[in-house]
Image 1: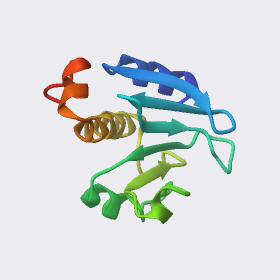
Image 2: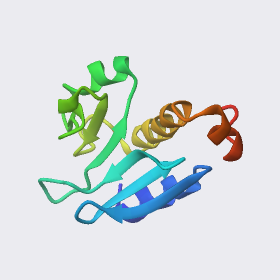
Image 3: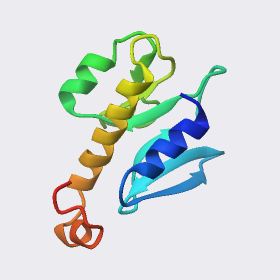
Image 4: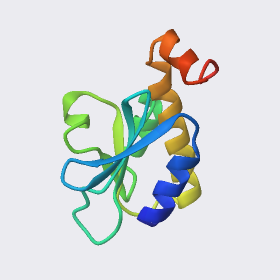
Length: 121
């Protein structure tokens, strides 16, 4: 996935906002809460970081091309960083980004979810 493709996909999700912060990372938020980060790569490719369920985290953390997200996972949060498409293709990444947005939206207050039109996040 390219940075443009990542940004276009995240922009297609409802109630999302984009900001470039933390040294040039492309950060996508829902209700002011981060659900996806692109950047922070050790290599040439695009590294994409996203929130997961506990079960997905346990599965993905040991998959080739994926790792527990630096900083976030070390603080007990269930975030994965996809560094290559070795075991997760772009379609699967889009599915995980969609699920990350849903998980983060569920953590918003009912009032904020209602204001954003996410009653059924």
